[in-house]
Amino acid sequence: MVCCTCLAVWVALATAAFFIVRHYLEKLLLPNLEQRHVFVTGCDTGFGHLLALQLAKHNIPVFAGCFTEKGAEELKKKAKSLNQGKIETVQLDVTNQESVDKAFDTVKKSLGSNKGLWALVNNAGAIGTNGPDDWLTVADYQNIMEPNALGVIRVTQKFKSLVKMEKGRIITVASVAGRVPFASAGPYCMSK
Image 1: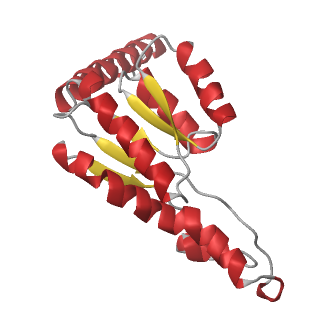
Image 2 (image 1 turned 180 degrees about the horizontal axis):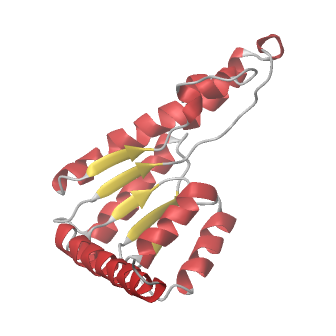
């Protein structure tokens, strides 16, 4: 029979070995993280906000697309406390082609002529007006399709050349509502 002390020692050693191996695998699999730039949309709050902070925490330079100045300021304030990585906020309205073009120019200028994006994360979106279909108008459907579907297409079309330069990836954050629709959320489910 194994004593409790021996078991505790084995568990401690196995745990330490796991974290050491994981640390070295991460370094081997993804070297030079500080040179892999990522553009994330929808960083004012929620998932995009947290993703930008997590990437910066791992020394990955982030371009954070924020819809509002208040959201950009909040993100900058939190990023300063990390003392790692770099977050550059970019004003972005995914429903407006001029705003997307301006964000692209900002990112391209910051990257320089020979650097691209390691990843583009399409996260910006909205819930919109939902309810029974009898209460909704075509405009309600259009208003939610703009950020959730057409915004993704607009940003992807504009930024894909930068992603191709690095042989990177394009990630689109979706919702389970796109696969399993729920009652009284027709516009949102359709947009996902």
